Structure formats: structure tokens, C-alpha cells
Amino acid sequence: MKLLMKQQLLNRYLLHGLLGAWLATTLAFPAQASLTMFNLNANEGSFPSYLTPFKDKLYFTANDGSNGTELWVSDNTTASITMLKDIRLGDLSSFPFHLTAFNDRLYFQANDGNHSEELWVSDGTAAGTTILVDIMPSENESSSPSHLAAFNNKLYFAANDDTHGTELWVSDGTAAGTTLLSDLNPIGDGYPSKFTVVNETLYFSASDGRNGYELWVSDGTAAGTTMLKDVNSGVGSGSPSQLTAFNGMLYFSAFDKSNGRELWGSDGTTAGTMMLNDINSAEASSRPEYLTVVSDTLYFRANDGINGYELWALGALQPNQAPVPVPAATEVIAQTTH
Image (tube, rainbow, N blue to C red; front, side, top):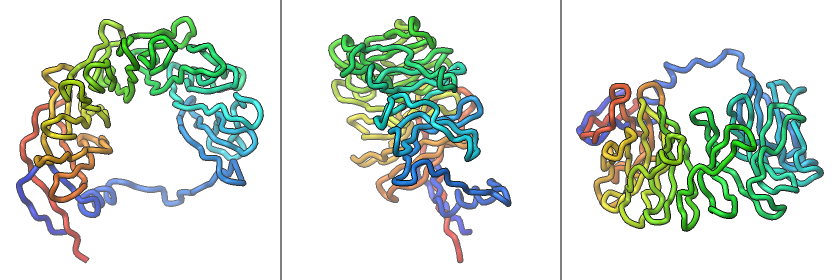
């Protein structure tokens, strides 16, 4: 392998070269690994989705061709793969979505035909799988709870109660303890999403109706839920995405009018929320995507405007060190010889 070194932005590794070699030397596969298909719907595929580990079993949604899309469970043996409960009886689907394990329970959205899409809970048994709360009591209207996230011993999610729009809700796992936490956008929908926990802070994207979709934080209280930074100042949206916890900080992709969509970082303060580097310094964006942490490195895909979309890597700072602008770094181009 021949390495050509040149000065540019951040460490970039070609997947076929250095990363491939790292994977080959780091990963070890069982000599007798087996591959098994579980055929739940012999006619057209069961489309298993939302695969979620819970109580040492796998819970997921699937359609067996007879009962619609329902909640299933498996302990990794063919005989034990079963539909946990036909929430919406007959061939209609309850569509259990957003499966999230929290405090020894599994929470999700489902429609039993009587309550439309509402928040459900399961202890892993059919009898213990019930609707938790009907946030919008109507046969034809639903609260559509989504983006479920566990934080500080509570469950946070987005839902619509038909009064406040789609806003930030919180639950302690009981019907009485499921309430609106904050009306982020009093004149419309806040649409909170992309919940990501870093240390003692819940980060997410939302709109207050004035600043577009920006980066928000919450400590779990209404008073402690606020917009952290107006990344793209004014009515335009910074649209933070790819929110990823790394080394005690938050890293994400965001857009501003001056630099386009680039890599950002945050230590949880407004001053400490900044663009780390304008990877594509031309008028275009580098569009960082697929942010993935492996050991002490943050990998992502980006386009510097010269080499197209390639694999990039950001090395770790000191633990809990605030993100700082990243200077030009060494680019490593790997070439293989055959």
C-alpha cells in the first residue's frame, strides 16, 4: 500500500484502502457462522421493521399476510417467533411504530381501530400490551406519538393533542404522568425530532415559528427547554440533522447562509455551538452524513468540492473538551497495488 500525503482538511480515508485494511485486521468472524431466514409471510414478505432488543428478546413489526402489520417477538429460535398481539383484530394493521425500550417496558405508537395512532406500552406479554394514554380522543384523529427517546428516567416524544399542535411531550410511564412538556411553537407546530442525549442534556431539532428549525436543548423541565442556537439566523432554518454524541459533546450537520451545510459541534452552550470547518469552502455544501462513532473517532461522509463524496474522520479531543474550529489537517490517500 502506497501512501501519498498532502495538506488539506480533516483526515480522509478511502474505504477500499485504509478502512478496509483496518476492518480486515480488527474484526474476527466466527468460523461456523450460520445464516437463517425466518419466513413469516410465504406469499410476499413480512417486511420486518423497528427491530428493537427488549428483555433479552427481539421485538419488531411484521405482516404475516393474515393479521396485517402487528407486533412480533423472537428469542432467536424459529419455534419462538410469534405475533405478540393482534392489536387491531382481523386483517387490518395496527402499525406499531417507533418501538422504544424504557424502564422495563416497551413503548410505541399503534392504532387499534378505536383510538387511532396513540401511545402504547408493553411488558413483553400479550396481556400486558395496552394503550397507555389517548392523547387525542377521537376515532378518526390521532396524536401520532413519534421520535420516542428515553432521558433522565422519563420518555420524551412528539405528539399532537389537537390544541397545541405537534409539540414536546413527556411521560413517566403512567397515563397520569404523560403530559405536554413545552409548547415550542405557540402559533403552530414545533415538530420536535432527532432527540439525542449527551450527558445530562437532551438535544433536538424544532421550530418556534419565528426562527425556522434550529437546535434546541432540554434538561427535562419546561423552563429548561429552549432554543440553543439560531444556526441560520432569521426565519430560515439551520435544519440540524445527523445529531450524534461523541466524546461527551454533540456533533451534527447544519446549514447557514454563509457556508451551506457543514459539520457543527456543541458543548451545550450557545457560544460553544459552532461550525467546525467549512469542508467545502466554495459556495456549495459538503453535506456531512452518516455520522458514526467508532472508538475515539467520528467518521462521516462529506464532499469537499474537489474529490466528491468520500469518507472523512475526526479524531477525539480530550474527554468533554468543547468543540473548537478544526484547522486544515492531513489528508491520507490510500492506493492499493495488485
